[in-house]
Length: 469
Ligand code: UDX
Ligand code: ADP
Image 1 (cartoon, rainbow, N blue to C red):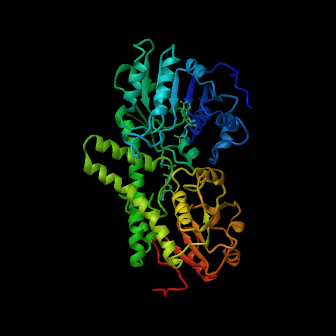
Image 2 (image 1 turned 90 degrees about the vertical axis):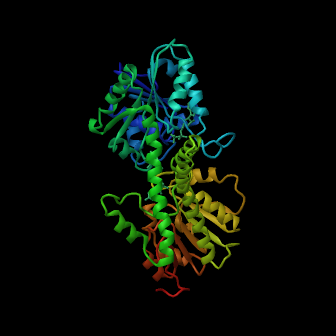
C-alpha cells in the first residue's frame, strides 16, 4: 500500500469525497497537472480505497493506471479517514453517487440525494475553518441550495461557499476528456464570496485548460446544464435509433442516413451511431431527473417530450429481442446464445444501465441458455446478474464462448470483435448460425458469405432464408 504521509509543503490542499468513476479519475488528473497541490480522495468503501492503493484499480479506464502510478504517494492519496480529511482540507469536491430513487415520492424518476445530504452533514460537523464545497456529482437543479441550507445550519460558525462544477467526461475516454475538455463549467452564487470561490476553482483548472474553455455561470445554470447536455446527447441516440427501425422496414441503411444527415454542419456527425440503445450511469438517470423536475414545476408537455427519449431507448432494446425471437423461428427455448460484450460501451468495464442487462434477462425469460463474454466487464456482469435464475455462464475468450451456440448477439462495440476469425467461429457454432450485430461493427457481407444469417441494426438483413432485394 502506498504511503499516505505528505512528503513536503504543498501550495493547496484538495479533498474529494467519493472515489468512484468520476472522483477517482478527476482527482488523478488534478494531481498530475498540479504537482504542487496535494489531492486526497476519500470513500466510505474501504475495499474501494484499498483497490485504489493497489496494483489493480477499481475501474478500468484507458490511461488511468499510468497517471495514478505517477502521482499516487506523491501528491495523490486515497484514504478512508473522511472526518479527519474534512478537518484538514478547505477545498472539498463532493463526488458521491446520486442514483435514481427506488422508494417513496419520485421513485423511478427523482435523484436519491441521501448520500449528498449525509456528506453535507459530515462536512458541517467536522469543519472548523471556511470551506469551499464543490458539487461534482450530477445533481438536480437547486441541490446546491439544499447543501447550502444544511451547511448554514451551523449558524455561521464556519463560512461555506457551495459551487457547482459538473463533470462532462465520458467513460472509456475519461483521461482524454479530462486532459482536453470541450469546456469546464463552474457555477457559483454571484456574491463577493461566491465570485472569489469561483475564481479559486478557475485557477485550478487554468493550470492545464485554456481559460477560453472555462465557462462560469450562476449556480442553477451550471446544475441544469449538466442535465441538459446529457439529455441532448441521449436524444440524438434515441433519434437515430428510432430511424433505424424505419430503415429496417424500408431497406434504407442507417449508416448512410446518419452520414448524409450528420454532414450538415448544423447537425454534426457525432452521437448518431445506431445500436442497441444507450446505457451508462448518466443518460437515463439524468433524463428522468429532468422529467421529474419538469413535472414538479407543472411542465407536463416538456416532461413528456424528454421522457420519450427514454421510451425510445427501451423500445430499441425490446425491438432487438423481438427481432432475435422472430428470426430464430419464434422460439429460443433450449437454444444457446452468446452475448458478445456486456459493458455499456467499449473501453470500460462499467455495466451500469447496460442494454446487455435487459437483453440478457429477456433471453433468459425465453428459456435460452446465455453465455456472456466481455474483455473487461465480466466481474461486473456477474455482480449485476447474480440474482438471476436461468442458464447463464461467463467466458472471457470469445472462441470458447461461442462453442455450440445458435446465435451471437453483439452488444458492445469492442474493436476486438471486428478482428475475430468468424470462419472459425462459424465452424464452432450450431447451424443455422445467426449473428445479431447490435452495434453494426463487423463485416456483414463477409459473415454472410461464411454462412451466417446476419441481422444488423437499421440495415437490410443478410439471410440465407429470405430473398435479398
Ligand atoms: C455520458 C456523457 O457523454 C458525458 O458527457 C457525461 O459526463 C456522462 O454521460 P458516458 O455515459 O460515459 O458519458 O458515455 P457516452 O459516450 O456518452 O455513451 C453513452 C451511451 O450511449 C453508451 O451506451 C453508448 O454506447 C451509447 N451511444 C453513444 C450510442 O448508442 N450511439 C452513439 O452514437 C453514441
Ligand atoms: P460516479 O459514477 O458518480 O463517480 P460511483 O458510484 O462510481 O459514482 O462513486 C461514488 C462513490 O461515492 C462510491 O465509491 C461510494 O462509496 C462513495 N460514497 C457515497 N457516499 C459517501 C459518503 N458519505 N462518504 C464518502 N464516500 C461516499
